[in-house]
Amino acid sequence: MNAAPRRDGLPELLAREWDVLIVGGGITGAGILLEAARRGLKALLVEQRDFAWGTSSRSSKLVHGGLRYLKQGQFAMTRESVHERVALLADAAGLVETQGFAFGDYIGRKPGRRQFMLGLAIYDMMAGRRARRYVDAADFAMLAPHINRDGLRGGMLYQDAKTDDARLVLRVLQEARRHGGAAVNYLGVESLLREGGQVLGATLNDGVGGARLAVRARLVISATGAWADGLRGQVGAPPKLRPLRGSHLLLPAWRLPLAQAVSLMHPRDGRPVFAYPWEGVTLVGTTDVDHGGQLDNEAAITRGELDYLLAALRWQFPQLALGEADVLATFAGVRPVIDSGRLDPSKEAREHALWLENGLLTVAGGKLTTFRVIALDALRQAAPLLPGWQADVRPRPIFAPVPPLTGQALLLDGEQRVRLQGRYGAAAQALCDAARDGELAQIPGTQTLWAQLRWGARMEDVQHLEDLLLRRTRLGLQLGGGALAIMPRLRAMCQGELGWSDARWDEEQQRYLALWRSHYSLPQGA
Image (tube, rainbow, N blue to C red; front, side, top):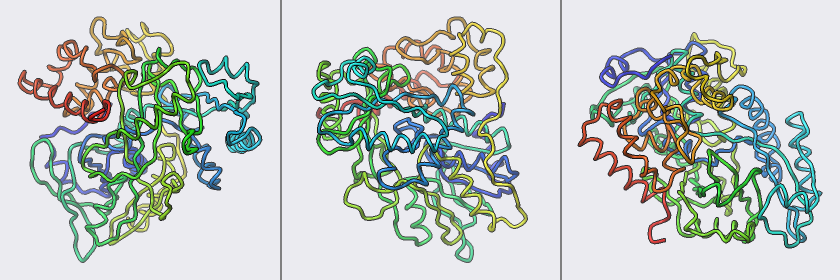
């Protein structure tokens, strides 16, 4: 198992000769690090906040082909996404899982049965399998209980996939480290180093120790997502991105019980909205609005977005009378969409793009599902800039096979073992071995084991309590009040692992709860 570099070893790490410096610790940067390291490049990734802090922990958690993009004629992107979904389901079992979707066919509402089934036929053809079917109103109501039955003629069923996006980033980074890549969080780029107009490194700011450090590399790749125009501005490039915010709700599974994901077109504007079971709760999303806030501040749901999503739920599930009191948590992310000048944010294309500007290679746009495709495209662009390096950039299996678990891990049922292996790879065995009495039990109301908290605190680059509760685990989203009720046991387990004093723990807990109330709860003033 390859652990993270020690913070006190940063000067020596940054003094090495690097082929590639990757800026940005989301799924795009992690994917580039993995594909570069496994092909022999000396690659270093730095992230100014935590790994997956930005868009890659705040997505809709869907690994999908983008069915709605077929309507916009984006066939190539849909085909590419479907192929990557198939690969992730095969290579990341337990982390990427199939999810059935149900879409009601209502009298007078679009898209109708013929149009939707045609789109699903194309979708299935791209995936090389048939997963679609149409059922009558009675069968559909059984599959999706509590739905609105007024005008219901039947419904379409199809399959996509889902994941824990933050854990996917961490698993990719773990695999990259296994191949010799290095990744450091809370290490931000203060300025780019340039000679003769060409970028050849960066001055970095250590967000933990406060030191300013320099690193040089033959090539700098910006994978900073919605923040990319900031670095591009340092080389004189004009802005090209349109930050769009997508906000989501999380409800208790008992309050909105779903076996199938339910997808619908919002009664107000016809945009797609969905609700589906995720990590022991029910996830509802998403909005698609221009984000006017400062990108360095965390995004948060607005009152208008909350009302918008609740209106969709009340229309689709009128019997349940869902309201604000049912919301466990919220989250919002900013998507890095390339600006084409369209008035409607939802009609902006989601393809990725690469720009080489004065030695800075920027990767922007794209989807969670296609991170491997994006990474390989970046390496193709990088090859001419790395004399002497040649490599086969055809896709390889995303993750190495994981050996069967042994020892006390066998106390877990088969589904739990697969789940741990998917999320932790080869480290799953060490996680189970490190568990103390009772820590292989699930935390009530979630699918998370207590042992995952100990492991995250010990081995997964946790610098702040929010890292542990919002990204290493998702307990801050799954449990009411940001997981306040489990804080005493959490402290007993993890304070020693983190090496924090009582004063440090108290400060971190206060800071985390303030963040949760301001950005992960109902909007202020709601």
